[in-house]
Length: 151
Image (cartoon, rainbow, N blue to C red; front, side, top):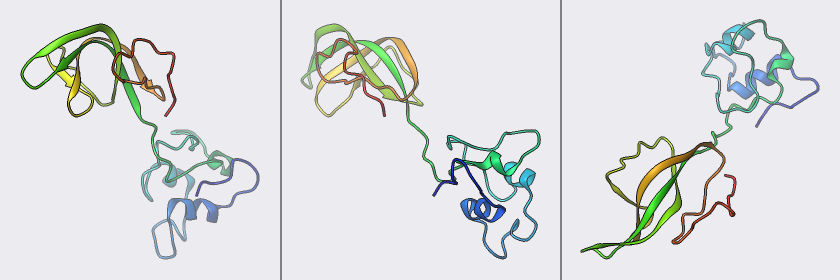
């Protein structure tokens, strides 16, 4: 459970968020610098709010820190030629469809990619976008990004 985003927090609140219990290093002699530097366990780099990586630290620098927050997925968006493959042959269907792959992804422009079992395959042409939070519908014959959604 994340620390509150404002108001009063205590060293004990930070210790609980970091999972520091009685008898653990940092329980009796907790230090902000040591906590920030990962001496009691790595700081969650996916937390939206976290203490600064350098400089002095105060209690308020921990507001909103979430030790268990998951990272957002990142996607690479590519234009591609679409083919229908029946197991023996691949037939060209259309060009410039948009497909998305979760990163890390290293495209091989000489390879066909199937996004689901059977059916359509894609030959990548170029990368359009790479980043968190955006993915296009990669359904057959999808030709624009009008239905982007966030993840």
